[in-house]
Length: 426
Ligand code: HGY
Ligand code: MN
Ligand code: MN
Image (cartoon, rainbow, N blue to C red; front, side):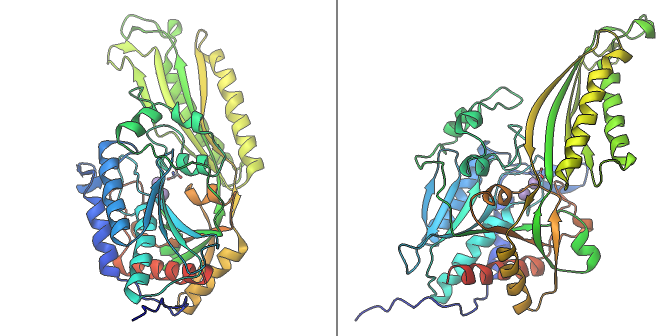
């Protein structure tokens, strides 16, 4: 009796929303912690930690259960491949990341990886083949919060950054990326230089308020705005807080505060369009009530959809930092570039494929630019790429344990992903 291999078909598949939700919640248990600020359970599964290793092994186990051929590259990027009926066809790729910030919810990145896995599981359930192979990707260190450069794994795979640059990055404790990758057992053999897939589609929570404000479940992402991350270190002079006259002080903490106020003034000036500025990390030393700080360290995150206005904002900040020592003679200012990406437009063809799939499924969508960075912006350099945004609740709050998308919205978004992948892999 010959076992018929079902011909490739684009008969629509339904995904199993309960199974998707269970997988999301099960992965969310790894790195879970009680978040005092929100009173909720947050997730801290930063890249290359033991928790990240556990999360990786859980997802790889699921990929293998779904019959995928799993490979890990030199950056620890994980790929799960489902063969198509045409062995010579280049694959359609879908994915995202499962590393998190330190105060994360359950959806950022994970919905894209586990959503793509759910598409595979549903194709298996329906006994459907696709002409093109489908590959799921889980990219390393997308968040950049541990080693200081975001979209790191996908940027090396797509050729924007080098393996050596990545391996030599260190975290706050001075631990090297390459050593940590080896320590958790994910320094893979597969070459990191990725052969361009036929197309790349990433499903992700919006992480902003637009879809909720418009009463829409889904959005088609037209591109990603420019990102600029810098670390600024201020060197002053430690002195007694009581006996040292103000005019004799070189107060690194004051200088840090001046920068924080200045970047907000840049935003409020309107000179730089839709600039967003964030000082997310502030540390002073020695950090004692009775000592004028001699060192302060801050990070400056600038975002702008317009590259030219981003460049003008960066120039403004550079000039401000250069002139800052005049306010406190003896102050020394040191800057270190952490990350820099230009605005990236996504493929019209892939956007249209997503929009058509959503329309076929009865969803009204809008096209919107992503405020957050994503692995898709790196993949856009080597293959036609676009993203599906899924509505977030509570003004789309993200990088916070309150991050939440409903099971219905997750199911809707991943059903559109399924239909889009079927179309692209036909
Ligand atoms: O920072 C970002 O935009 C992304 O979450 N890595
Ligand atoms: Mn993300
Ligand atoms: Mn994120």
